[in-house]
Length: 555
Image 1 (cartoon, rainbow, N blue to C red):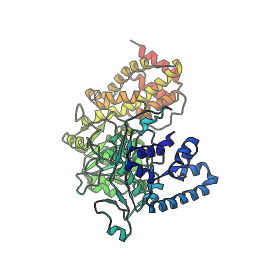
Image 2: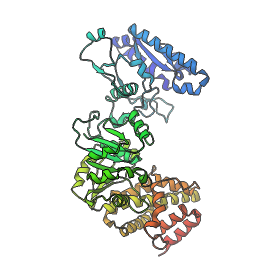
Image 3: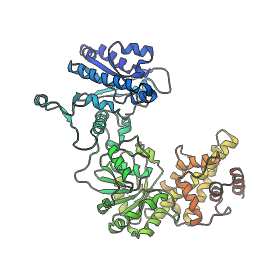
Image 4: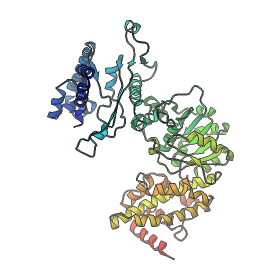
């Protein structure tokens, strides 16, 4: 039924006014092969001008017909050029299919061939996803919104045509270097997206400033950047942090020693491992050249603890010479302790440069621009307001930690909660498997005991108890233990169901190295000891849970 989009638009235009009727009669829709398969949609498409095209998926699903489909596409393109020369208007759905959630999807490559060196009119539609929701087979009456943008010349016309072309019409010119096709496709999406609500930008949402309300303003490379920030390492959190920092008038460099990775990310303007769906802002640059650290005004540590050895050796001299502040955004333990402690001890970083940014937030939801926040601690308290300003925008709200100088406490809250979230996942999986149904009573009762043990360990390891009541402590603990997308909780849950426990996560790695950092005993740290027995020593889950229940039941 979603294939009725073209007939619906034709019908609306044809009946709205004499002018609309005139436009409708000139329209020729580009329609995909699947739209012709159902009899009733094929009948609708035959009632006005349409051109059949085949997608890459069509060819992949029918490899024996790929040559025929290629010829169909070539014929459709030639016919469209002829129709346009006769004054017809070619109408294209650039996403290739109907967005199921109303958010903008990546534009298909075919669009490039149809619009290059042509005048286009970008048209944006809102609320189409409410007409036929994915959860229903029934149509709904909806008050939608259609915005018709100003004409834009894509590329250029012949010299003679340009002489008489209206000067007031905006021109989207091809770049001198780089992938011209991808540049054009992305900029067409921005033209359409500029007329959409900010929550409908989808794939392209991070290309607009997040600290401006009521209008869409594209992020640009500043002529005079206020800061030059280097994010070290390519983790999901480092990508998310680099993307949110790009909302400011600054340059953001993401350093990783893998040259092939950084070059491909720059070429495609998206991060390929964690967030291939999202286009990235132009002032975020991936680089494998350590020289970029020479002039950095701020370093953000974004490398996972088990990857530090692969990323840091080459950049040590630069971190020693450049005295810019150094803030960590990754939660977890290394084999010798906290991440900042290891980096400081290995590279001799000064105390007054160090800080930590932590909170209850998933990097995936930062990329989706959902409201979240951090708390910031620094040895030099004067750095906090500067970092807070950089991280603040319309969807991220950072604040100083409860004890602003308790760098160790904020780190410990984030590092320890990964282990206790792993343990909570094991308990949840065990109870769900054993008793079935809802086990909230058990989980929320145990969460109090888990958090008390976590706080006791964190205080013993050097944090201040009040810090554990903040965003990086209690709030992050609750998110990680009960959040649907919490990686460590899901890892623990899978372990309870018998899945291998070697899948790397911050909680798994932290639990593995805990004996290097403290003595684990069933008497003093029963939860931690039970998790270690199950995950690292591969003991029977049922037996360990029963022992834990007995230990926690003692008065």
